[in-house]
Image (cartoon, rainbow over the protein chains, first blue to last red):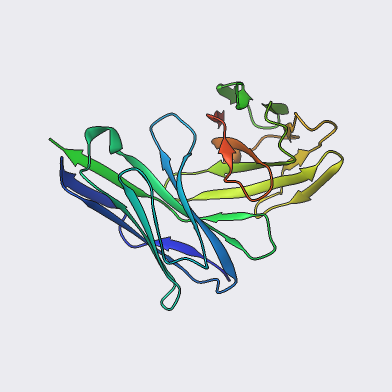
Length: 112
Length: 111
């Protein structure tokens, strides 16, 4: 069946370094991908999204890259700050559907 | 504009008890959904609704009921709570192709 998975459960980075969080998906019908950030005790917050007709999208300090050939998605955070410490989830939605499928999450820890 | 509001924030139930988790949104979103989040797992879809009067099952619907009598509210009912339903429950809503907006969750413990 379809699945969305993350390569690493925990990522530790030094403050000021760039972070890269990876995600693999298996549903070739997926055409919409989202990254969420979840801080302790809170619900997931939208960070950035990308549609399958794009391979890169940039936001403020964040960039999402989509490689449809290998079904891989990544989130890059520039100049990582302590406030970026959280769990990051990727999610995907199939073309014509309205249900999101979430990955298991990556814990990002920012070391001072 | 409060967004998605979930109540209660915390709840402890005994096995066999019933309760309703409340979810309300003030953004006029037609789509609403319930997820559960367990340690080491992503969010799993329980039930969803594409509009008032319409509900459908998600990935893990057993043991839960929903109804959607208004656009704003989407309550989740546990008919007979079981320890396996101990989890954090999130309600989320959206309109069209926009990303889901999540509430801050209800932490449920069933003893």
